[in-house]
Image 1: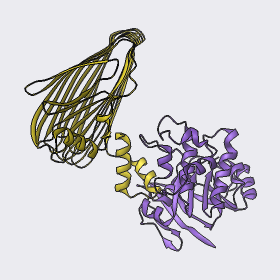
Image 2 (image 1 turned 45 degrees about the horizontal axis):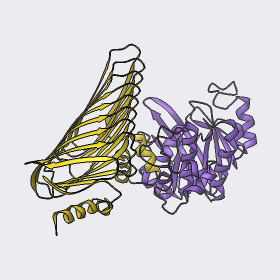
Image 3 (image 1 turned 45 degrees about the vertical axis):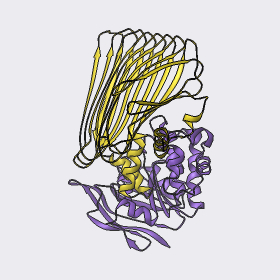
Length: 311
Length: 238
């Protein structure tokens, strides 16, 4: 079986649609370790990708005014037990362009795998980008995931991200996102992670509301059990008149897991407003009792609640 | 015949006696309204019946279908057919109304139960049971979900509170639907007009039942603001 077939098979086993890479109407880039296996462009998108010694470098431009109908699929896999994959992405959405990206990060057999993402994103005036990243890890816990992104959202621009790592062991996760929002720009950062065993989770997300009436929400949902650890830092800076930001972190812990939440709110303009809420603890007692009154066992109730917050 | 009975129930919170030898009975498919003002122990009784954490009687028995259930956990009581709708139902992230109504009864038609609670399925099925719902909407969805369980006994803790006046009839319809489906209902309320739909009623005051009988009679007694506990003087709890 070829490498691309193996990657498609792994995507399908992880619940993805294996027909995506064969559909000429859908732009995609499929990478296994540091090898580009397949790429497809559609009208309105320019993609330049090249292999490096340890990964790939890709430049993606969505041209001015272009609304890309189908989501662009990015498949990043390391199918071997060991390997390093460094992805350097330079994404630019020109004025009034819009596109959605769905990234599948697949490491089903990882025993010692490093996946490093270093992204620079520029969203032009009035442009909109949606980025959803879902990880499929095996049960060995030997993955190190280090996604870093520096994002600039232009005037009236919109940026939405959704990071999901709820299947398999996390391993070590170190998210570092930083977003600067210009006038009237909207930013929503969402992360959902489920840690087990000795998984080690660090999430740092920062939004600088630099422009007038810019708005943001950082929403983090983490569930950890066994001996897992999680630290979530959500930073919002309100620097302009009418800026509105909110940091919302919820962590559910079980067993000997340890969670820490650090919301940092920094306001330099008296007409800006930034709020935060953070809740860490075991599963809510009243939620448990309500579900048990519906006939669910305590174990089923915990499962429903945790799956709910990670959905 | 009573298939649900509470005998001489005493419950204390610290040193304070909240329920003081309370006894009630409810028959099959019977609506038993429990009237009482704030702080008389109505919700406490509901938590004791359901077996919520921290609510264990000092003495007395809760008997369901001939079995003393005092030591059973909440889900064990639910498996017997007891369930409850909380006065302020809790919210859940990431669970749709449709999934919530069919959590335990996968065969239930969620649209049917939403309609019975006066809600349009098309508008609610895909919504989340979270903070985006108003208190009244959440309450009706809870009633719909409880109804979908086909319980033998539904303890409804103030289903009418927080519901706008125009929608009160919807709540009455749901309560009647429980009876129609063969469920017994312990209807906790402090509104006598809601109690009037019951088959029988009792008034709770100072942790005791101070009056029992037809809903009309008990409602009159309730309105008179007098009770035996308060020795025929103006009731201290009103």
